[in-house]
Length: 180
Image (cartoon, rainbow, N blue to C red; front, side):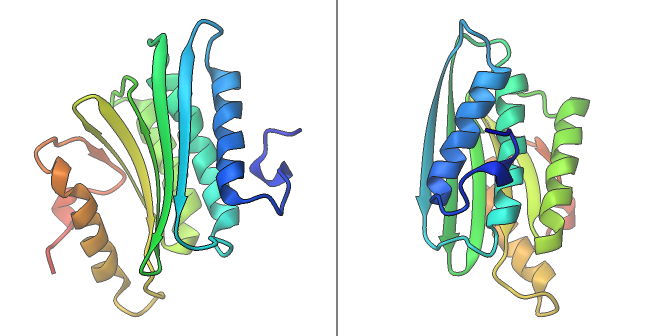
């Protein structure tokens, strides 16, 4: 089976496809002496319209979590969630690995993820709080041309609220957000 997300069974549930991507990332980028657990939770819609965008993004997020975040750990945990609520979709990958948010690899990964998400108006961010690193992509429900920036800003402000004092954020500056 290929490492490309599109090579998976097209009819498989997205939860199963995300689990396969996580297992592949752990097998490919983890080391034999590591124990990395993986959980995948999918809540909400069918995600059919975003499936071809979500899977490559998840693959990149998972690769980065294992290859860089878990590099110095013998035991680790990665939690993947895909949630649809009120038409908006949020993909997140949490891990308890080491994150150097200012590292050029993190910036390169987030730039790649942002590029993959942009055609669907997705916004990517990376944040660290205590012992958890989280990469998040938000796909807003609002169609283009109908207040997209305002809707994205409100979603990001809600996501960032617990992390306002952490100060670690890539992908979009908090200074550019307003509380409209």
